[in-house]
Length: 131
Length: 91
Image (cartoon, rainbow over all chains, first blue to last red; front, top):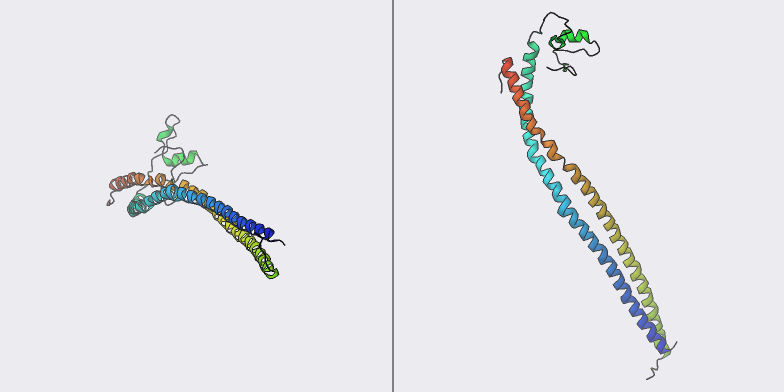
């Protein structure tokens, strides 16, 4: 092998090494920049929005708990008092002209599909009836 | 100018060239692995961005959910009214 060929091969090898290094550095830099942009968007916009929304939970949960505890403390006494009231025993006057003035018992007899309880733990307002 | 090299020197040069080629191949392999790993990180970061946007969409409804606190005032006022009408000691 001649000396000139050895020199040429050495130069080619050095150039190839530098080119490979430069190529990979450029590719990796491009991808790292993309990662930087994506993380900047996530941390700057999205995470900040989440942080602002979740901050309201900490402040709002205490308010909600306080109000709900106050309501829960007041309702049992009201419910007991309401259940101890005598149920209205008005005579049933079946008047087709004034159906809205009939008693709940009359309405319950008139519509057996939807029995309406007026008191008790299982009381539910009659669907479609105004109080 | 003609360089006169001995046979041993030419052999050493050739061995150096072969080692250099092997080094280049190793560098390409390692940098390719590094590029693959960075690409994997990039894909994960993109997925993270998508998930974070979904979470942000969900947490945006917290303001709507917390609006129920205003309704609780009305519920409490109604409970006080019922308590007063029923003769229960209102709190």
